[in-house]
Length: 351
Image (cartoon, rainbow, N blue to C red):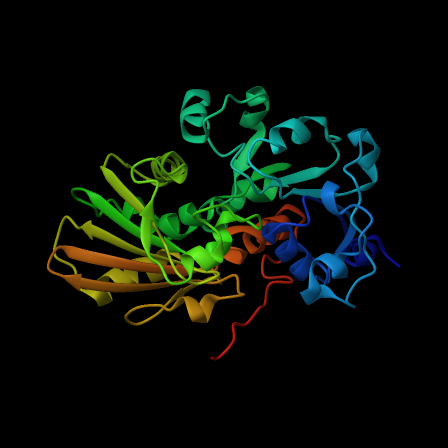
């Protein structure tokens, strides 16, 4: 076998830290069937010793993997190629600096997204214990940062709201088309709050209810503004409001902007089509997208409506796939030289 064929046949040896939550479950669902990856390690301290199928019943009978305690000596993981950190905010900063330099790391938390330590402390309500490590991380919004991700060893996966919002605004900011304030009205399903229920996040509380939360204080706001400045000349005021949807998964963002000149929906659509011409996972749809059509997939569906200089961008994603695990796998594919679609050709259901 020649070296090129051998490289193609070699699978990426993957470890997952925090495999018992929703993000970890989605990583497992995707990676167990990824043709170029093999899950070698999955940690969950509270579930250690249990089989993956016992904890995630949707995976019952599909794998013999068992959860283990996170190893104390992280240098022992040098046999892995890639580690996903699907840990609560604040834990990845304790783990990432100790992983072997030979291992590529993709962090799904917010620990390494922000480039300013003071902004991080304000957004997440805690100081950063490994901020000197942050500069090595590349922001992992695949569609706007593809070339840097290809060369990266460390990637910080975007937040779910940030993904939906940035994909809806990036073409307009990059082409300097905006004038005036931008208003983002974003709504999310209950799975965005994680697997452990709290008073306002438990699904029985949310299923027949609708309310706003974290007005003007959501931790994804500085992340969104930071990355918009990286895309183009972003000096606009952002009003960002999040709401609880009575569904289990999905994000729908209505983004209200004013353009410098009058623009029809078809003209705006051409701007988006050109910007995303190499982005398989961004789909432009007529009218409004629907979270049902992106659920369980890695797609972001974008629709547009226009009147004069008023433009509304509608953006829909699955918060656990394109907003978390799917985008993380998309980034892994790029980091290891594979087609970014590998293992992610996931179709939604109908109905």
